[in-house]
Image (cartoon, rainbow, N blue to C red; front, side):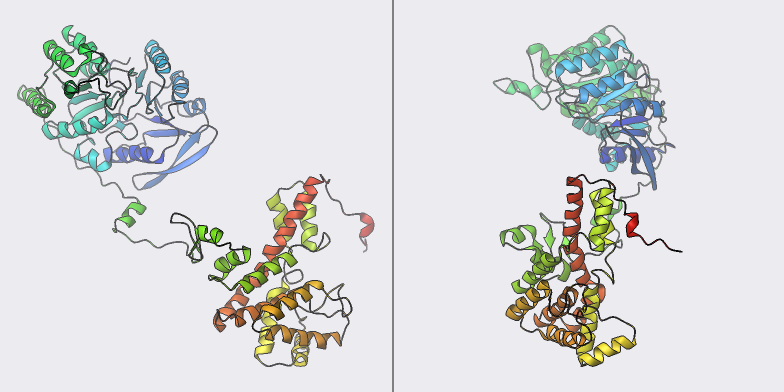
Length: 608
């Protein structure tokens, strides 16, 4: 066990098992105390590496993350404190690993419920190797104005209120972390504050004892008096009694053992800590308080009188000239986190993204204002979800059914079209699903699958301007523009596209109006007079029928319809549908374990 000061303004720690809040609190304390370097040197997250962004005052810093304790210790040889936030299941193993590192001198174990047999082994190893274990079941410790462990002393407001940003003259040790906060406050009211405070933890076998730390405080010149807060259960306080009797403590000790109310209960009572249970008269709070009083400690008659006893002891030391007045300093203002400031109404900040289609802030995500549970319970289909996320409204069932038909009809068109071919070649090159899918999607454009928007745009413009099919087609010809949605490499007047026929049949049956589709058919009649294969293709059918869906449903105004066509909604429908097929082709090639594709040279015209 160390015999003097554990921490300083240069102390740095390694933090095991990343927890954002306690680390940020440590860094805020550093800034409050005017430290030049952050007290957290690195984080250990088993299996992961990189950096974590945190704040050191107003400056955002990157703290290294290491995958193992050994790697962290090698990277930060001056970090001698190990703060262990592992669960009770793994705390012992990780602590032992840290204790075995030559650079680590102090380990704080935060977890409660560490098996007692494991704790005993840790204690034995630490004592044999002159190392300090604080905990288990501890909040940690603090040296005022220099260093603190994790959540010790709570919020910044509490730290400032207790004047922990600068050193005082009192050494404090307790079993309880919560009561430590209370006593920091009490001590700050009636003295110049603490120099160092330790919560050894409430387990039956603490890694270090009350007397261990009192004896340390006795060797620290800046500590002029000690305050000890024990509790019923166990016999830890008696080691302090022996130290006092043997004259190993030369400074005043004010002590109180909590739990005197236990005698009011007829049966044995287990208080909050595992070790807070009296195992007989010797372990009672009354017996311990009396033993400490007889050994020379200042022991008040009740907890309520503890503050007065601390004040009286401190004032006596001041009168004797053993404590000089502490010069007060004004701590710097800790910058407030933006999210906290926004919640409190202190600042307003612009958002970076606008979303009007979904919201995940509540108990469940909402699509277009409709909760996810409603979508499932009401039996919504894919078309309904598309109507909510794309069109921001619940379209009639005939509309959403039409969307679903379009998706089914456009899902795939065999392995020979450019999109499927690209996905197949990419999959056979051993690439992953996303790469294979994207390679196929990138072929979608004006020549492949991208004609739906253009078909809708040109058909709408021609119809709305009252152009005859002749005027429309010949006008496009003069501009050198092919009529989108017209023409097919295979289909013809005598070999119609079944997909187009199915879409037209559905629209005639369910749509209130099919004026744009009828206009597209009139255009087809004219183009067929020029060539047998200039038929209305599936792009033209979907484009014209979507115009009928938008205008005939009565749920969109002219401006909204124009915007939908301009943005590219209809091509989005093809992209969504064809993704199904491209994924299928990718899986098919991987399932078949097809080798790398190489195009046959005899299928290439080599020419000068």
